[in-house]
Image (cartoon, rainbow, N blue to C red; front, side, top):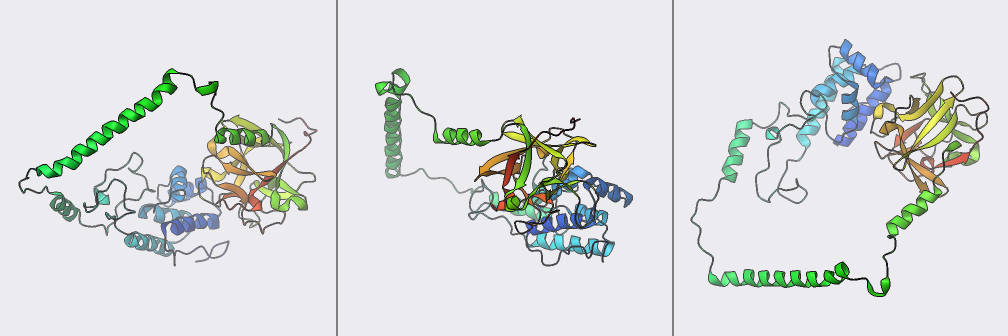
Length: 379
Protein backbone atom coordinates (compact mmCIF):
# COMPACT_ATOMS: atom_id res chain seq x y z
CA UNK A 1 0.00 0.00 0.00
CA UNK A 2 1.03 3.64 -0.25
CA UNK A 3 0.38 6.38 2.22
CA UNK A 4 0.53 10.17 2.27
CA UNK A 5 4.33 9.97 2.55
CA UNK A 6 5.03 7.29 -0.06
CA UNK A 7 5.27 3.54 0.33
CA UNK A 8 5.84 2.29 3.89
CA UNK A 9 8.96 0.32 4.86
CA UNK A 10 8.72 -3.40 4.15
CA UNK A 11 9.82 -6.39 6.27
CA UNK A 12 11.21 -8.32 3.29
CA UNK A 13 14.89 -9.16 3.52
CA UNK A 14 15.28 -8.49 7.24
CA UNK A 15 17.72 -11.02 8.69
CA UNK A 16 18.31 -9.97 12.30
CA UNK A 17 16.28 -8.89 15.30
CA UNK A 18 18.01 -5.51 15.30
CA UNK A 19 17.03 -4.92 11.67
CA UNK A 20 13.44 -5.90 12.42
CA UNK A 21 13.14 -3.52 15.40
CA UNK A 22 14.78 -0.71 13.42
CA UNK A 23 12.35 -1.32 10.55
CA UNK A 24 9.41 -1.01 12.96
CA UNK A 25 10.84 2.33 14.03
CA UNK A 26 10.96 3.36 10.36
CA UNK A 27 7.29 2.46 10.02
CA UNK A 28 6.51 4.81 12.90
CA UNK A 29 8.50 7.59 11.28
CA UNK A 30 6.69 6.91 7.99
CA UNK A 31 3.34 7.26 9.78
CA UNK A 32 4.28 10.66 11.19
CA UNK A 33 2.49 9.77 14.42
CA UNK A 34 3.73 10.29 17.94
CA UNK A 35 3.52 7.48 20.48
CA UNK A 36 0.39 8.99 22.00
CA UNK A 37 -1.22 9.24 18.57
CA UNK A 38 -0.35 5.59 17.96
CA UNK A 39 -1.98 4.68 21.27
CA UNK A 40 -5.15 6.50 20.22
CA UNK A 41 -5.12 4.86 16.77
CA UNK A 42 -4.68 1.42 18.33
CA UNK A 43 -7.61 2.08 20.66
CA UNK A 44 -9.74 2.98 17.65
CA UNK A 45 -8.73 -0.35 16.09
CA UNK A 46 -9.75 -2.23 19.23
CA UNK A 47 -6.14 -2.81 20.33
CA UNK A 48 -4.34 -1.87 23.54
CA UNK A 49 -0.99 -0.21 22.89
CA UNK A 50 0.31 2.10 25.67
CA UNK A 51 2.94 4.66 24.70
CA UNK A 52 5.35 3.21 27.26
CA UNK A 53 4.97 -0.23 25.66
CA UNK A 54 5.81 1.19 22.23
CA UNK A 55 8.89 2.98 23.56
CA UNK A 56 10.05 -0.17 25.33
CA UNK A 57 9.58 -2.45 22.33
CA UNK A 58 11.37 -0.11 19.91
CA UNK A 59 14.24 0.39 22.35
CA UNK A 60 14.99 -3.28 23.00
CA UNK A 61 17.21 -5.76 21.22
CA UNK A 62 14.64 -8.57 21.36
CA UNK A 63 11.78 -9.47 19.05
CA UNK A 64 8.47 -7.93 20.11
CA UNK A 65 5.52 -10.28 20.50
CA UNK A 66 3.33 -11.03 17.51
CA UNK A 67 0.36 -9.26 19.10
CA UNK A 68 2.42 -6.10 19.48
CA UNK A 69 3.69 -6.21 15.89
CA UNK A 70 0.18 -6.59 14.48
CA UNK A 71 -1.33 -3.85 16.66
CA UNK A 72 1.61 -1.51 16.07
CA UNK A 73 1.65 -1.61 12.27
CA UNK A 74 -2.15 -1.26 12.19
CA UNK A 75 -1.86 1.81 14.41
CA UNK A 76 0.72 3.19 11.97
CA UNK A 77 -1.92 3.01 9.23
CA UNK A 78 -1.13 -0.29 7.51
CA UNK A 79 -3.95 -2.61 6.46
CA UNK A 80 -4.51 -6.23 7.50
CA UNK A 81 -2.55 -7.57 4.52
CA UNK A 82 0.53 -5.53 5.44
CA UNK A 83 0.04 -6.45 9.10
CA UNK A 84 0.08 -10.15 8.19
CA UNK A 85 3.35 -9.65 6.26
CA UNK A 86 5.02 -8.11 9.31
CA UNK A 87 3.78 -10.88 11.58
CA UNK A 88 5.03 -13.50 9.10
CA UNK A 89 8.45 -11.83 9.02
CA UNK A 90 8.52 -11.85 12.81
CA UNK A 91 7.69 -15.59 12.86
CA UNK A 92 10.41 -16.29 10.32
CA UNK A 93 13.06 -14.52 12.40
CA UNK A 94 11.89 -16.29 15.56
CA UNK A 95 12.16 -19.68 13.83
CA UNK A 96 15.66 -18.89 12.54
CA UNK A 97 17.04 -18.04 15.98
CA UNK A 98 19.66 -20.64 17.05
CA UNK A 99 18.73 -22.86 19.97
CA UNK A 100 20.77 -22.53 23.15
CA UNK A 101 23.58 -25.04 23.50
CA UNK A 102 26.40 -25.86 25.87
CA UNK A 103 29.04 -24.55 23.48
CA UNK A 104 30.94 -21.34 24.17
CA UNK A 105 28.73 -18.33 23.54
CA UNK A 106 25.67 -19.98 25.05
CA UNK A 107 23.89 -18.73 28.13
CA UNK A 108 26.02 -17.94 31.14
CA UNK A 109 26.01 -20.50 33.90
CA UNK A 110 25.25 -23.49 31.65
CA UNK A 111 27.21 -26.66 32.23
CA UNK A 112 28.53 -28.04 28.92
CA UNK A 113 26.46 -31.00 27.88
CA UNK A 114 23.53 -30.17 30.17
CA UNK A 115 20.10 -29.77 28.60
CA UNK A 116 19.10 -26.23 27.65
CA UNK A 117 16.25 -24.82 29.68
CA UNK A 118 13.24 -24.46 27.39
CA UNK A 119 12.30 -20.81 26.99
CA UNK A 120 8.64 -21.63 27.47
CA UNK A 121 9.38 -23.04 30.93
CA UNK A 122 11.28 -20.00 32.20
CA UNK A 123 9.40 -17.92 34.79
CA UNK A 124 8.12 -14.60 33.52
CA UNK A 125 9.96 -11.48 34.66
CA UNK A 126 8.25 -8.64 36.56
CA UNK A 127 7.34 -6.75 33.38
CA UNK A 128 6.47 -9.68 31.13
CA UNK A 129 2.86 -10.29 32.10
CA UNK A 130 0.10 -8.76 30.00
CA UNK A 131 2.50 -6.58 28.01
CA UNK A 132 2.42 -6.69 24.22
CA UNK A 133 6.10 -5.92 23.80
CA UNK A 134 7.76 -8.88 25.47
CA UNK A 135 9.06 -11.86 23.55
CA UNK A 136 6.73 -14.66 24.57
CA UNK A 137 6.27 -18.23 23.29
CA UNK A 138 4.80 -18.61 19.81
CA UNK A 139 2.39 -21.17 18.47
CA UNK A 140 5.25 -22.92 16.71
CA UNK A 141 7.15 -23.44 19.99
CA UNK A 142 8.25 -27.01 20.87
CA UNK A 143 5.79 -29.29 22.66
CA UNK A 144 5.91 -28.46 26.40
CA UNK A 145 5.52 -32.03 27.68
CA UNK A 146 8.18 -33.29 25.31
CA UNK A 147 10.60 -30.63 26.50
CA UNK A 148 9.93 -31.47 30.15
CA UNK A 149 10.40 -35.19 29.52
CA UNK A 150 13.59 -34.56 27.53
CA UNK A 151 15.01 -32.36 30.25
CA UNK A 152 14.22 -34.87 32.99
CA UNK A 153 15.68 -37.77 30.99
CA UNK A 154 18.93 -35.97 30.35
CA UNK A 155 19.29 -34.60 33.86
CA UNK A 156 18.52 -37.86 35.73
CA UNK A 157 21.34 -38.79 38.13
CA UNK A 158 23.70 -41.63 37.32
CA UNK A 159 22.66 -44.51 39.61
CA UNK A 160 25.88 -46.55 39.30
CA UNK A 161 27.56 -47.19 42.71
CA UNK A 162 30.38 -44.82 43.51
CA UNK A 163 33.83 -46.27 44.15
CA UNK A 164 36.24 -44.62 46.56
CA UNK A 165 39.13 -42.89 44.86
CA UNK A 166 42.45 -44.68 44.96
CA UNK A 167 45.01 -43.57 47.57
CA UNK A 168 47.36 -42.37 44.85
CA UNK A 169 44.74 -40.04 43.46
CA UNK A 170 44.52 -38.25 46.83
CA UNK A 171 48.13 -37.00 46.81
CA UNK A 172 47.68 -34.22 44.21
CA UNK A 173 44.78 -32.86 46.23
CA UNK A 174 46.83 -32.79 49.47
CA UNK A 175 49.73 -31.06 47.72
CA UNK A 176 47.35 -28.46 46.29
CA UNK A 177 45.88 -27.72 49.73
CA UNK A 178 49.35 -27.24 51.22
CA UNK A 179 50.38 -24.86 48.45
CA UNK A 180 47.20 -22.85 48.96
CA UNK A 181 47.86 -22.45 52.70
CA UNK A 182 51.44 -21.31 52.02
CA UNK A 183 50.28 -18.67 49.53
CA UNK A 184 47.71 -17.40 52.02
CA UNK A 185 50.37 -16.96 54.73
CA UNK A 186 52.65 -15.06 52.34
CA UNK A 187 49.80 -12.73 51.41
CA UNK A 188 49.04 -11.96 55.09
CA UNK A 189 52.70 -11.21 55.83
CA UNK A 190 52.95 -8.86 52.84
CA UNK A 191 50.02 -6.68 53.89
CA UNK A 192 50.86 -6.39 57.62
CA UNK A 193 53.40 -3.51 57.19
CA UNK A 194 50.90 -1.41 55.26
CA UNK A 195 48.24 -2.00 57.90
CA UNK A 196 50.29 -1.25 61.01
CA UNK A 197 53.13 1.00 59.92
CA UNK A 198 53.82 4.10 57.82
CA UNK A 199 54.96 3.79 54.25
CA UNK A 200 58.72 4.11 53.70
CA UNK A 201 59.76 7.75 53.49
CA UNK A 202 56.30 8.94 54.51
CA UNK A 203 55.10 8.74 50.91
CA UNK A 204 51.40 9.26 50.30
CA UNK A 205 49.58 7.81 47.33
CA UNK A 206 48.88 10.31 44.56
CA UNK A 207 45.71 10.65 42.54
CA UNK A 208 44.95 7.86 40.13
CA UNK A 209 45.34 8.53 36.39
CA UNK A 210 41.59 8.19 35.91
CA UNK A 211 40.93 10.86 38.56
CA UNK A 212 43.47 13.19 36.94
CA UNK A 213 41.78 12.67 33.57
CA UNK A 214 38.35 13.34 35.05
CA UNK A 215 39.60 16.57 36.66
CA UNK A 216 41.14 17.74 33.40
CA UNK A 217 37.92 17.02 31.53
CA UNK A 218 35.79 18.84 34.12
CA UNK A 219 38.02 21.92 33.79
CA UNK A 220 37.02 22.10 30.11
CA UNK A 221 33.27 21.90 30.67
CA UNK A 222 31.34 25.11 30.08
CA UNK A 223 29.71 26.99 32.94
CA UNK A 224 26.01 27.75 33.15
CA UNK A 225 25.11 30.48 30.69
CA UNK A 226 23.81 31.55 27.28
CA UNK A 227 25.38 29.86 24.26
CA UNK A 228 25.10 29.21 20.58
CA UNK A 229 25.16 25.43 20.08
CA UNK A 230 27.11 24.90 16.85
CA UNK A 231 27.54 21.53 15.06
CA UNK A 232 31.23 21.19 14.19
CA UNK A 233 30.58 20.09 10.59
CA UNK A 234 28.81 23.40 9.81
CA UNK A 235 30.82 25.63 12.16
CA UNK A 236 32.13 27.58 9.18
CA UNK A 237 28.72 27.93 7.56
CA UNK A 238 27.07 30.15 10.13
CA UNK A 239 24.61 27.49 11.31
CA UNK A 240 23.53 26.85 14.91
CA UNK A 241 20.95 24.68 16.62
CA UNK A 242 17.58 26.42 16.78
CA UNK A 243 13.89 25.89 16.20
CA UNK A 244 12.57 24.53 12.92
CA UNK A 245 10.11 22.08 11.42
CA UNK A 246 10.33 18.62 9.88
CA UNK A 247 11.39 19.00 6.26
CA UNK A 248 9.08 16.21 5.10
CA UNK A 249 6.07 18.18 6.35
CA UNK A 250 4.74 15.15 8.19
CA UNK A 251 4.37 17.20 11.37
CA UNK A 252 4.27 20.90 12.17
CA UNK A 253 5.74 20.80 15.65
CA UNK A 254 8.89 22.64 16.72
CA UNK A 255 12.08 20.59 16.45
CA UNK A 256 15.80 21.12 16.97
CA UNK A 257 17.33 21.81 13.55
CA UNK A 258 20.33 23.49 11.94
CA UNK A 259 19.50 27.12 11.16
CA UNK A 260 21.36 30.41 10.68
CA UNK A 261 22.92 31.76 13.86
CA UNK A 262 21.91 35.32 12.96
CA UNK A 263 18.66 36.22 14.66
CA UNK A 264 18.51 32.79 16.27
CA UNK A 265 15.30 31.97 18.16
CA UNK A 266 14.92 30.65 20.79
CA UNK A 267 17.88 31.53 22.98
CA UNK A 268 19.84 28.58 24.39
CA UNK A 269 20.81 28.33 28.06
CA UNK A 270 23.08 25.52 29.28
CA UNK A 271 22.47 24.46 32.88
CA UNK A 272 24.31 21.86 34.99
CA UNK A 273 21.90 19.60 36.90
CA UNK A 274 24.39 17.50 38.89
CA UNK A 275 26.22 14.20 38.48
CA UNK A 276 27.89 15.50 35.32
CA UNK A 277 24.59 15.97 33.49
CA UNK A 278 23.26 19.07 31.75
CA UNK A 279 19.95 20.27 30.44
CA UNK A 280 19.77 22.39 27.31
CA UNK A 281 17.08 25.00 27.78
CA UNK A 282 15.34 26.99 25.10
CA UNK A 283 13.92 30.36 26.15
CA UNK A 284 11.34 31.63 23.69
CA UNK A 285 9.99 35.20 23.92
CA UNK A 286 6.43 33.92 23.39
CA UNK A 287 6.34 30.23 24.34
CA UNK A 288 8.55 30.60 27.41
CA UNK A 289 11.19 28.09 28.59
CA UNK A 290 11.51 24.45 27.58
CA UNK A 291 14.13 21.70 27.56
CA UNK A 292 15.48 19.82 24.57
CA UNK A 293 13.97 16.35 24.86
CA UNK A 294 14.43 13.03 23.04
CA UNK A 295 11.04 12.11 21.57
CA UNK A 296 9.01 9.87 23.90
CA UNK A 297 12.17 8.81 25.79
CA UNK A 298 12.91 6.50 22.86
CA UNK A 299 16.24 4.66 23.08
CA UNK A 300 16.48 3.74 19.41
CA UNK A 301 18.67 5.58 16.91
CA UNK A 302 16.82 8.18 14.85
CA UNK A 303 14.58 9.66 17.56
CA UNK A 304 14.14 13.39 16.91
CA UNK A 305 14.84 16.06 19.52
CA UNK A 306 12.27 18.72 20.34
CA UNK A 307 11.52 21.23 23.10
CA UNK A 308 9.19 20.16 25.90
CA UNK A 309 8.32 21.18 29.43
CA UNK A 310 11.34 20.74 31.70
CA UNK A 311 10.67 17.83 34.06
CA UNK A 312 14.21 16.74 34.98
CA UNK A 313 13.73 13.41 33.18
CA UNK A 314 16.77 11.43 31.94
CA UNK A 315 15.73 11.91 28.29
CA UNK A 316 15.99 15.69 28.93
CA UNK A 317 19.50 15.51 30.35
CA UNK A 318 22.79 15.12 28.52
CA UNK A 319 26.43 14.26 29.18
CA UNK A 320 29.05 16.52 27.59
CA UNK A 321 32.19 14.60 26.66
CA UNK A 322 35.18 16.64 25.42
CA UNK A 323 36.05 15.97 21.77
CA UNK A 324 38.65 18.23 20.21
CA UNK A 325 37.50 21.83 20.64
CA UNK A 326 33.91 20.77 21.27
CA UNK A 327 31.80 18.17 23.01
CA UNK A 328 29.94 14.98 22.20
CA UNK A 329 26.41 15.34 23.57
CA UNK A 330 24.90 12.09 24.86
CA UNK A 331 21.32 11.69 26.15
CA UNK A 332 21.51 10.33 29.67
CA UNK A 333 18.82 7.67 29.16
CA UNK A 334 20.21 6.09 25.98
CA UNK A 335 23.96 6.71 25.77
CA UNK A 336 23.63 7.46 22.05
CA UNK A 337 24.98 10.64 20.45
CA UNK A 338 23.18 13.78 19.30
CA UNK A 339 23.85 14.68 15.67
CA UNK A 340 22.36 15.43 12.27
CA UNK A 341 19.56 13.00 11.40
CA UNK A 342 21.15 12.16 8.03
CA UNK A 343 24.75 12.42 9.13
CA UNK A 344 27.78 14.57 8.44
CA UNK A 345 26.91 15.09 4.77
CA UNK A 346 23.71 16.99 5.65
CA UNK A 347 25.04 20.54 5.96
CA UNK A 348 21.89 22.38 4.93
CA UNK A 349 19.80 24.73 7.01
CA UNK A 350 16.77 22.85 8.30
CA UNK A 351 18.57 19.54 8.89
CA UNK A 352 16.84 17.81 11.79
CA UNK A 353 18.79 16.92 14.94
CA UNK A 354 18.30 13.44 16.43
CA UNK A 355 19.93 10.91 18.71
CA UNK A 356 21.98 8.50 16.62
CA UNK A 357 24.43 5.65 17.01
CA UNK A 358 27.76 7.24 17.93
CA UNK A 359 30.05 7.53 14.91
CA UNK A 360 32.75 9.96 16.04
CA UNK A 361 32.03 12.18 13.03
CA UNK A 362 31.89 15.97 13.16
CA UNK A 363 28.10 16.26 13.00
CA UNK A 364 28.10 14.66 16.48
CA UNK A 365 30.52 17.22 17.95
CA UNK A 366 29.13 20.55 19.17
CA UNK A 367 30.81 23.84 19.99
CA UNK A 368 29.25 25.95 22.73
CA UNK A 369 30.03 29.54 21.83
CA UNK A 370 29.10 32.14 24.47
CA UNK A 371 26.17 34.28 23.36
CA UNK A 372 24.72 37.52 24.74
CA UNK A 373 21.80 37.26 27.12
CA UNK A 374 18.45 38.00 25.47
CA UNK A 375 17.28 41.60 25.56
CA UNK A 376 13.78 40.48 26.49
CA UNK A 377 13.00 39.14 29.97
CA UNK A 378 12.95 35.31 30.00
CA UNK A 379 9.73 33.89 31.37
